[in-house]
Amino acid sequence: MSASVSSAAAGDVERFDVARARPPFPLRRVILWVVILGVALDFGIIVANNPNFGWPVVAAYFFDPTVMEGLTITLGLTVIAMVIGVALGLILAIARMSQDRLASSLSNLFIWFFRGTPLLVQLIFWYNLSTLFPKISLAIPFGPTLVSWNTNDIITPLTAAIVGLALNEAAYMAEIIRGGLLSVDKGQGETAAAFGMTRARALRRVIIPQAMRSIVPPTGNQLISMIKATSLVSVIAMADLLYSVQSIYNRTFEVIPMLMVAVIWYLLITSVLNVGQSAIERHYNRGERGDATKDEAPAKVQENA
Figure: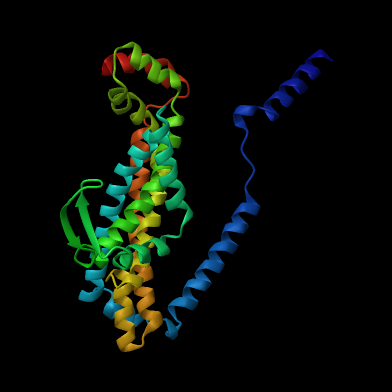
């Protein structure tokens, strides 16, 4: 009797051995994937065989010199506006977190205005600045004018586009950077001060590097948004990518194919940026192991000091 019970127990143990357990076959998930891939493939075939998209025209104009010039301007505007926007946004973020009421108030006012008005309106405003101020002057307050320029000589479509995009981006980057700085434990700054670091050095060597984990993802989103926002400069006669394809289809009347050229270029650029963003995120996430960072923080501060 005892032997039979023991063998039954051994059989149960063997039957319910966790080490030999296998997950069930995900039949429903496989069916869902097959359905989704089937629908996507069918849609792709429909688009590829639709003559109204004008794929031969797309191929013919994809590397057209006019399109490539517009693409170059789009990329150049994005880089310049982002560099200025990030630099100015960092200053605004630090000013907003400052104990100085004047600095924080001016930063709040800047962010409130440029985040509260549409970018298109801002671009048109800068482009027509000469309507309000025919001349731009440097003068001593309540004193003589030192130097003066005609506004139309300074505010060209290029400068209006750069100023409009950069200032608008600075307002958003200020909040992104401020959020990243607030994500760093206050003890980091206190420890840095205890080791004799100035506020500027603590920000540069301790706080900002740790805040980058929170800053990089939304900054990547802003960069991609900036690529697309440059299309708005076409309203002030700036020959970006969208303006270039518009100038072509105004001559050839091939509206959809030329818009597809712009769409494909925008998708290619954003895809490359997504890859770059992922690489940067991996760089700043390396070595992170939960609370280990907090435990190692004083050692990092001492090393940086």
